[in-house]
Image 1: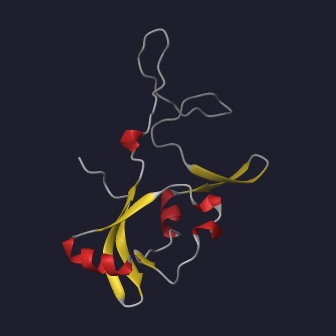
Image 2: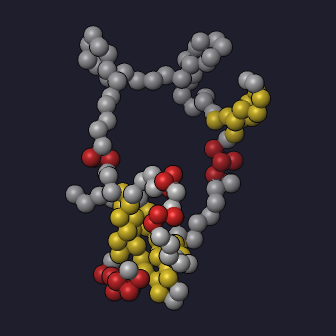
Image 3: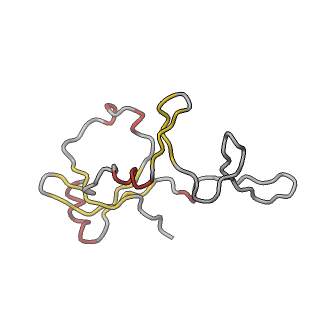
Length: 130
């Protein structure tokens, strides 16, 4: 099974544009992940949200995100508010120029991706850009 693209969009260099896909170099299937088990029974365990003051478990859906503005003071933020401030994307990567690899700081090289043409029509334009 081919890995699913992490992103689909367009790659643009001057007047040449082609549809591309970004695929993680290391897929989730290749990463080692562990589950938390009960040592005595071997059963998987699940997490439960617990109120820090009362110690009581929260009912499903009673949790909310919050941003700490002071020592123990939080502003509650609804999911709709987070969605409202999302940056709209044009799904286009514009190449404005090229630089030496050595001038890129290591912090920007966290997750490697393969960039590939998204379809047969884009292959020729991708070859021109490459």
